[in-house]
Image (tube, rainbow, N blue to C red):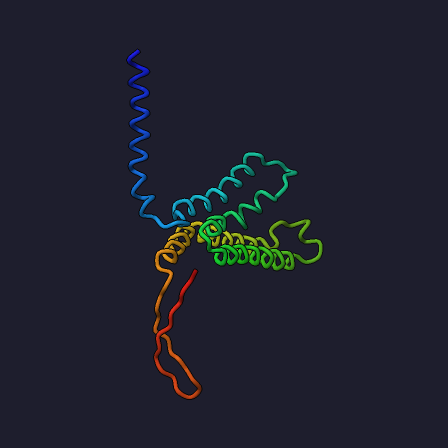
Length: 182
């Protein structure tokens, strides 16, 4: 009889401790803030999990859509979560552009029937393109947390002032500019 009481008391204590440790953080945070850790984990997970599934279910007739998702869109998921769609689309565009360019240059280096007989034709171009795409993947995954922190900084400080040169025709002078976001 004592064991269920001890167990339920321990569970209640853990739940209460978990609630108390979260209350100050929730009351201090602004609405609509994004977690840098969540942004990072979303980018990492959306890249690694499809690769793992594609690797575990590999066959000769495998559809490449899952691997393409992991390569092109996976690293951008954290940036979309953090509200930085510009960075997400830049990364997707870089990866897609490099893939198209490497494929075009790689296949154009294969003349005549050479591609069917020799798989080495264009392999250097494909390898360089793959490394650039991998670097872009790593960069987007690594900077997803920064996108969330920048999003949170914009929420905390929606008004900023900057010194800018102002020009009214012939004369240029220093001025103060103000940026307000809603």
